[in-house]
Image (cartoon, helix red, strand yellow):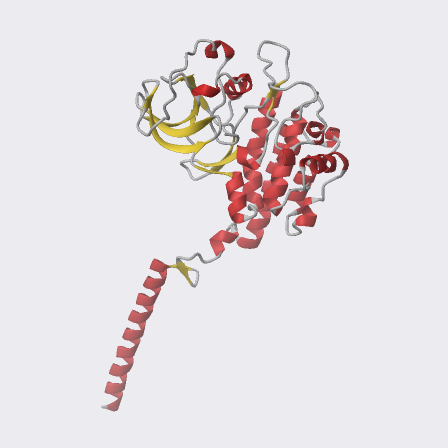
Length: 366
């Protein structure tokens, strides 16, 4: 299922209690756990599906990430499910999708209940538009970086930051907030009972194009700076429509990431403000000691946003470019209603002027 905001697998203790019946696919209007009514499927993967649902006990819309019962015997998938629930539960921030509940469906399928998001993944926005407005992008990423900083402080490294795992959620106020999804392969940096890393030393984990050099080399001392590199790759892609490192195959890509510095983002998009380029270039330092922490990155993005807004205000009086350009429903920069009123006022003024001229001419000719 990868980037969809939804499930993985239950704890081993939970899995041990399950007796699998004949699997019946979930259907619309089905009631799960005596309270969650399935409304529509949002997506499906190899291990389960994501549904928009409604909690009929409290009349709230939610997202259900439900695993297929037959894959419960896969210990890796079960551990990822447990990872996601624990990681999201430990980090409470507006830029991390909220987990509301966890349980088992009537057929034994484990599920997570998450907040239902309104919007689209950043990957969809990039695919559709090519690039994203720098001011909007950095405004969203200031929250994303702050959320990752909080996770890093608690010893949680995401390890799979990519556009598909950052959701552009539109709040009821209209504000766009970035939501980090899918902590299924996150790593917890402690030695206590919550250390549920999925991999052994030397294993490469993550999405290849977004891996940091230390991930690509399979190092076992990955820390939060790996997520900062991945954020830099996502920013680079969203601002230029290209990736900093591209290669014809996996091995060649790993070699490039490990041995070559990426282009400065300004070379791929010379129109970008300098403050934006400085943020991206800081993230993409192959030497991780030179990268900012996620907290410092959040501060950098906020500073860049303030600079862009100040410049926009000087040039346009505070209006965004989209506010100045006529839309498909505008005529000469006016809305259709404004244009119609202008035409009516103009016509009335012309009629009055014409009548006045006729009357004046009549009296003069007399």
